[in-house]
Length: 394
Ligand code: HSE
Image 1 (cartoon, rainbow, N blue to C red):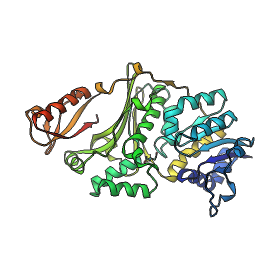
Image 2 (tube, helix red, strand yellow):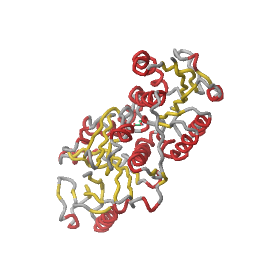
Image 3 (cartoon, rainbow, N blue to C red):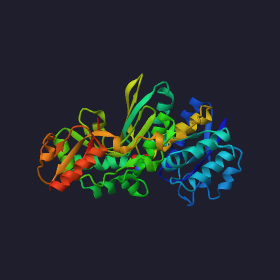
Image 4 (cartoon, rainbow, N blue to C red):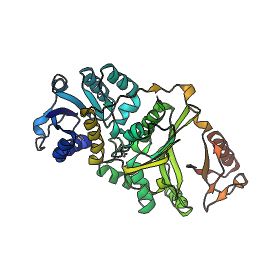
């Protein structure tokens, strides 16, 4: 028996998805009991040299009106027209899978309620962690746990850049160019380097863990542009790696999510996650700490995750989530988040007398964000200009 799908967007991930389905066609058919055939590929461009050239269509209605197509795999990226195309597919009673974190983090509630109304599935394993099966793990293997916290390295491009800065002495721009050449980066590099991509991913993980979608504008987000080589070196000498961390936790039903560069101690397994790899630590009340590790970006790893959703849905194991919108009162104010601080100043200051001198910078005790901001103001006013402040994980 054959089951038919359509691919929307024949870019890096879309072509990877066609390749995985083709390369592993026999294996998938043996395991699932049916063959999966890509009937159409929607793209604005033609691909005359591609082995899939005869499947390319430019009119979405061809796909929508074909009752043989059970599922649409959206890999277009961006919110529009991905949102409209996904809604139209579900209204036509076709399930949708996506690798598109922007559309899930921004329009997830609307997409999930459309899936419910039409009794189809909307799944997005590839939207977080590239090839790492993190969504399925939270949703199935850890479903019996009250999740306390998720912390992770969620963006392959910035992890590649930080690793190159740490181990190869690379500067920021050349490391970014390499990541782009390898196909890891988003079309707009600011989505990676300014933390926007990681913000969308932590929003999705928070929703899975706590059932509430935090609007991305309520997630404190910083990228890696301000991370200086000097801080990477001082941190390394003191036994830390600087990583872009996405973190979400719950406290008495209130939830918090944020993204920022953090110092990660060398004995924390996240510190060993390098290059394009992602690592995600999940803390559940019964299981304790679980860490998932794998390639967080790239053609075939991301396609692997897309195809797992396709297979789950076509096998009858598709899921539909019911998320609520996190309202203001559900969200913990970032000012109240507590952490130790790495602080580098232009000169010594008595205000840092209680802090640990790590040679070139200081590590303070725990303080809230509001207290840390106050300390920065006082240091600047005292003439010891703050050249870097980076939070410490754990
Ligand atoms: N640009 C993203 C990253 C791709 O570098 O992680 C995978 O989501």
